[in-house]
Image 1 (cartoon, rainbow, N blue to C red):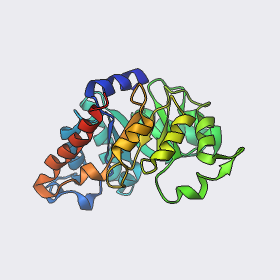
Image 2: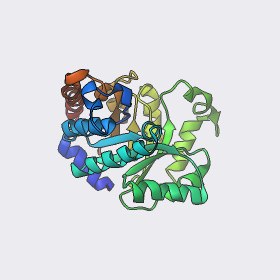
Image 3: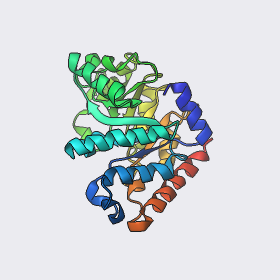
Image 4: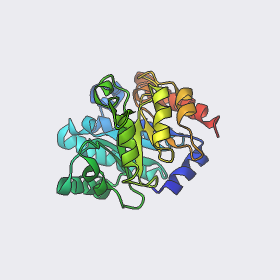
Length: 269
């Protein structure tokens, strides 16, 4: 999906919502556990009731890789089901960060084999870990910029390069390696003041923003800090939608939770 297509979808749906499909089999409602593929069936039910509200879906690879061969099949099937619903941006949350032939093979795996639109990347090894994912029209790298976890303080906020924080230097440098048409950044939702600083470091790039909902990020604060003329944000909610309800109410509750977020976003359009 190109930037033009993504922005058109955002404006049409009046939404910045990204639904995180970090599905754990033991948390799937009981009535799905009788299915031959419970995770896949649950994911498809979630997508069915949210695809008109969401502009993106993010699949965290760890939740599928942990299930072995079956998990990978569930991943492929879920991606195919999302594709069948039309114009939704699909993110493989893999946080890959290698170089050379390895990075090239990761790009082939995600873009050619799985046919996702974007993959999350760790930039610690520099340009060599980012450039193999660039230069593919409609495909994106999403670089870890500044994250929401407590451990972010260990490295990301170190003062370097004349007093800038490390995350600012990373974002400014990576912006030279990929254009706003092919590169996004992960920017956590739990520090709105830091999101303002991240926006200064990368004014034209989209941000994937995790942390709204279960992690305590405030939606309006994120919108105030990161909004651009194109929207500029993909705001992720995982547990807050997936597990909004229990039992037979799980899927209707998921739609309600997604709709509440979408309607709050729509007020900005």
